[in-house]
Amino acid sequence: MSLIVQKYGGTSVQDIDRIRNVARRVIQTRKEGHDVVVVVSAMAGETNRLIELARSVSPNPDEREYDQIISTGEQVTIGLLALALQSAGQPARSFLGHQVKILTDSVYSKARIKNIDAQVIFDTLKKGMVVVVAGFQGMDEEGNITTLGRGGSDTTGVALAAALKADLCEIYTDVDGIYTTDPRICPEALKLKKISYEEMLELASLGAKVLQIRSVEFAAKYGVNLVVRSSLNDNEGTRVTKEDKDMEEVVVSGITLNKDEAKISLRRLVDKPGIAMKIFRPIAEAAINVDMIVQNISEDGHTDMTFTVPRTDLVRAQGIIKKVAEDIGCKKVDADEDIAKVSVVGLGMRSHAGVASKIFQTLAENNVNIEMISTSEIKVSVVVKKKDGEKAVKVLHEAFELGGKG
Ligand code: ADP
Ligand code: ASP
Ligand code: MG
Image 1 (cartoon, rainbow, N blue to C red):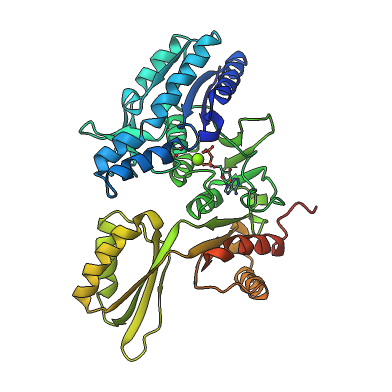
Image 2 (image 1 turned 180 degrees about the vertical axis):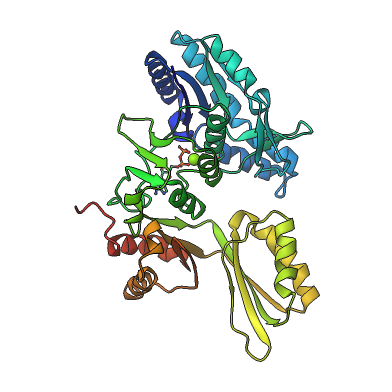
């Protein structure tokens, strides 16, 4: 007998019919002789609704109360799924994050899991029950409820699989697996049979929200056997796994689009040591993730600095930068939300030259202006105007021949 963790996302539990469908799949897995731990998200749209409720009372809500509120969607779905399983004759018990002791740090709304005390899960499985756990939430050392960031149920699923040493972690969603790009933007996208942890980490961090980035970090760190597949059919899905030889041969494996960032520019900074530290230290202390940073070449002792942050952190970042700008004598700070980041990812870029120039040529031919560029060993990202984001994904997908031609 093996142990399988199955995580079902919001669309897979969006109504009672879908919850019954999940119950059927779980029971089928039990019939095949496996122990099952299920992690569920809130019903599709519910977390957004809760966020709006909180913001309607307070536009800049207290972080602790905000997490108290937005974590509740999952409490409903675990209870409903446990009931659906019981009604179908399968004993089941649901647990909130703190009831299985998912211990996190205290960084509200993007808490990190520190430890999972899996004893209660093992005890419950031993009684022949299915264990249903609320995704997205945990508890800090002081007993406060925390949430793990949008899409965080993936991380609950994978972290549980690691803690329980599960044989398999299945992430069930509304597409058949991981594609060369978002199949909703580019219908020609091809499903990948497998992808390395490393490439998936890049895709996730660059905006392919099919897996939350921290779930991929956990999977890579603990070697979790991970599969992404659809809850609505029996198609095979995509395996996320250790890198192997034939993966290296693929130059480009995927393209991502991220429309959830904003850029901040500080103009005419005095070009002297310590300026970057003064700008980015307080931003880091506020737990705001800076992504791309571009500093122009200095001209008459002055330079411009531009960087991107998550759009949800823009107002906080602007508040911080306003103070810093006064301190360092910078008179002009601009913010721009009208951007999209498009990234091309592939392990084979390590050994193949010319990917960046092909990207620039393709975008030029299609009249897409590039505002920022950043590269790493296995990716190239460009920032373009928001309206050009989807077009850029499509033309690059075609230029790198990722579609279903062959
Ligand atoms: P869930 O609610 O199940 O967690 P998400 O909406 O978080 O589902 O993630 C699934 C979505 O991710 C898909 O519907 C798809 O639009 C999007 N997506 C983005 N990039 C990719 C990709 N490369 N492959 C598959 N899906 C992708
Ligand atoms: N319900 C949470 C969200 O919408 C967590 C998740 O779905 O993974 O972000
Ligand atoms: Mg998700």
